[in-house]
Length: 420
Image (cartoon, rainbow, N blue to C red; front, side, top):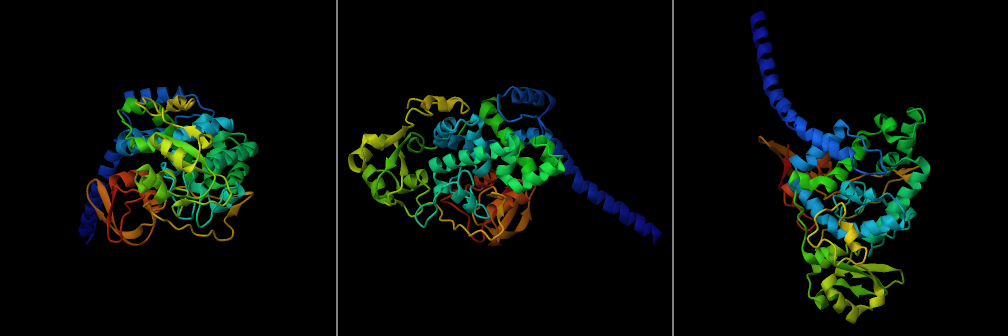
């Protein structure tokens, strides 16, 4: 009996080693080699930023994630950046805010304006409904300004400026943007009333502990993606070379698309805030984004040259560096996703606690494994964001690996491929 027990224990030990050894080997391959790590650290610490830049293990691992493990997803994100960077930059400069904040929506939504979290945070900047209302954004059956690239960015800058007045440290501001002022205030008290992010970090939720390192890694990527052989996958010219006009009355986007000779879906993607496909003529100020090469048609049929507030036609023409590309502009059927009402008690201090990410309303699933992927078969309600968080994968990576988009969502019974 004793011999059988010893044999059984040896067998169990061998099984455990066989399970753990590949994970140990894989973990060691998830980081840069020493020389590359030295170069990455040197480049990283040379970046100019108002936020406290630190090359922590979490930052290094996140950089590796973006520039080595998932280059293709990073190329897609960087390719979408020219659509929004001129808008972000103009507003950030107008509000006199740190220019690196233009890259925060990459962390928030992977630059998908239609992104909706499991608790209803929506848009490029992932505003919760109460916060959005507090910051003056309108949400009706026809319009959700959290999806509007211009108005949501203006509101985000005002919100971040408010948080900076409270904390005086941009790292802590980002933590409060992610988890709410109540959570951050509690962490400050536990840290002996220190307000520096790195001093309070250990007392923050795990997601918020990772939030600032993710942002710092993104700053590195937009400055040094070429050093890692990443080529941004820029969308078509009509999505990048655009003009923005102030709208005075009702415009049906179906009719506008027909008059301009462009696809309706493309026009809806440029203007995701108009939920029902038209600009309401309700007397409020609205904006519309159109392909620049159709500007003449728009002025002739819908407005005048005085309505044009921005032209991005010179932007991203053979651009070489996304971190400075915005300087070129100085002179110059999506998925309907319901937004659940927040339950009482969601608010936190004077601004609500918020949740970060995108929700494609996927369904829960059984798990099938192979050597490099896990596959989840969709069976009942679960979000893509939840799946990404559960397996430590970026939302953009899931979208890329499965060829998902806002107009190509998975269906019940489909397998979702998760890279491991």
